[in-house]
Amino acid sequence: MVRAIPVVDLVFLWLDRKESPANVGVVLLFEPPPGRTADKTVREILKAYRATPPTAPFDVVPAVQPLGVPHWQVPPRIDTKRHVLRETLPPPGTLDQLHARIAELHRDMLDRTRPLFEIHLIDGLESGRFAVYVKTHHVSWDGRSAMARIFGSLGTEPGPIATGFHAAPPAPPPGASELASGLRALASQAIAMRELYETVSRRLAALRGDPARPRGNAPFGGPHTRLNRPVTAERNFGGFSLPLEEMRRIGRARGGTINDVLLAVADDGVQRCLRELGERPPESLVAMCPVSLREPGDDEARTKATTLFVKLGNPRSGTARRLDEIVASSARAKSEMRGMSKEASLDFAVLAFGLWFTSHAFGLEAFTRPVINFVVSNVGGVEGARYLGRSKLIGAYPVSMVADPTGLNFTTLSHDGRMDVGVIASRDAIPDIQPLVQHCLAAWQRLRRANPPQDLTLRKPPPRKRSRTLRIPPIQRS
Image 1 (tube, rainbow, N blue to C red):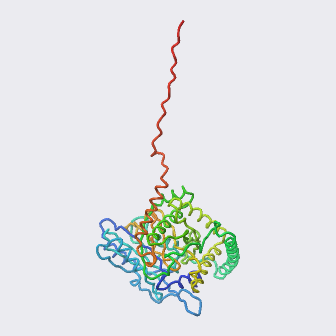
Image 2: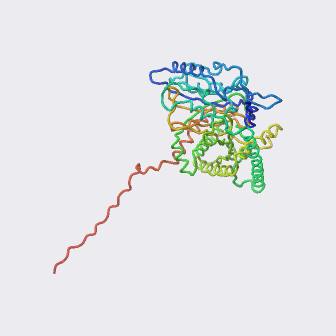
Image 3: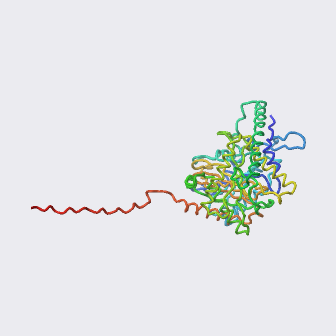
C-alpha cells in the first residue's frame, strides 16, 4: 500500500535546503563498562548496528514529483555502511571539539535518494567516554515519537547490545480502513476550520480594541532581533543540564511548571547574551513552544504537534520576576489552546507560519514583526537510567533544526533525574554559543537563590523564652 506524505510533513520537506536543512537529532553520551575502552565498545556497536536492516520509517525515501501524490517509496537496496558511521576525535578530544563536530555534521542535508537517517559513533574523547549522534529528517518523526523510539532501543539494565533505534519495531497500522479514516479526517477538518476562523476573529477584535490587553498565544508579538536575521548554513552547538526535581519544586512554588522554569532560564540567558552583542530588545521576546498532540501509546512515525506562542519576560525584569511573568503568559496561551480541537490547534500554528511565509515571500519583513524570536521545546523524558549494551547513558542532548524566521533553538530531553538541554544556533545569529550557555546556567543559579527549599529540619528552633517564676512570700504566723 502506498503511504502518502501528510501536508505538515511536506512543509518540512519544503523547508529542507542548504541554509536550513530540516535535520533533527540527538547526541547521546555513554560511559563504557568497567574494564572496556571506548574503542572496543564502539566497534561492537558498529558491527551490531550495521548488521540490522532498518524498519519504517527508515526503510523508505520520499517521492515528491511535480505530478502525482507525494508518497514514501521503498528503495531497491539499503547499504547500512553508508548510514552507520564511525570517527575518532583528534587529541585532546574535548567536549568543545565534540560540540563543534556535531555542528558540522548537523549542517549538511541528508541525501534524499537514501533513507533519511545517519548514526555517527564518535570516540576519542579525553574523558574516555564515547558519543552516538543520531541524525534524521523532521519528516520522519516529531520529538515525542523520536524520544520514544531512541529510549526504547536502550535497556533499563546493563546487558547485550539491543537493536538500534533505526531497526526498532514500527508502529502497528491503524485498525480502521483508509476510507473510514479519510472520512473522519475530512469531518474533523471542517469543524477545525470553523474553530480556527472564530479564534482568529477574536484575536483580531482584541488587537483592534486594546493592543496592550493580555492575550493568549502571541505570534508576531516580539521585536526584531539578530535572532531573526536570515538563517545561514553554519551552525554552533552547545548544551547544559539542570536538576529535574529542583526545577519541578521551583515551578510549583511560583505557580507554574518545569516548562515555565526552562523558559525563564532560556529567556534570561538570551536577553543577557543579546546585550553583550550590542542589542537591547525594547520589549518582551516571544518563544515558540511545540506541544505534542499524541495520545498515550501513539508512536506513529510522523509529525503530530502544534505550537504555543508564549510572550516571555520584560527585558528589565530580574530572573525571579521574569518567571512570574512567564507563568502568567503561558497559562493564558494554554487556556486558549485547550479551547480548540486538535485539528484547529494544528491549523493555528500552520496559519501563523503561513502568514509569515507570505510576508517573507513578498519582502515585507521590514513592515511586520517576526512570528517568533526563538524556539524552546521539551520533548519529554523517561524515568531511571538507560544503557546501550553495558554502557551507561550519561547525557542526551537534542540537536534540533534551525530555520527562518529564527536562528536559535533550545530542545530538551529528561532522564535519570536531569534535564539535558541542547542549544543550536545559526552562527550569524549567535557567533559563540558558550556565553549563552553560561548565561543560562547563571540564570538557573539566580532562580535557586530566589527560591530556597523550605526544609524545616534545617532551621534552628527559635530561642525559648525564659519564664518568670512567681515568688510567694512566706505566710506570717500570728
